[in-house]
Length: 84
Image (cartoon, rainbow, N blue to C red):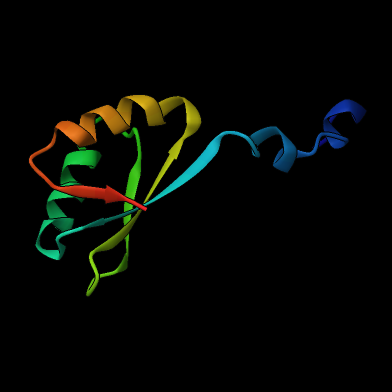
């Protein structure tokens, strides 16, 4: 494929460097699956990954634009969550 010279010089990493956001949180380990399902059902505002099941630690991957709305919704969920 032939791309214009301008596109060849774009640094994709720098374009998206300020958009990704990773939030670490701690919840009761019995609630991890519920958090995953609730966040998944919000129209892909974020993705939850378990980082330490024994301690109930999760990582929420989102964007800076989506985080404000996602945080408000998570705080209204029937889950006690501690952002760390």
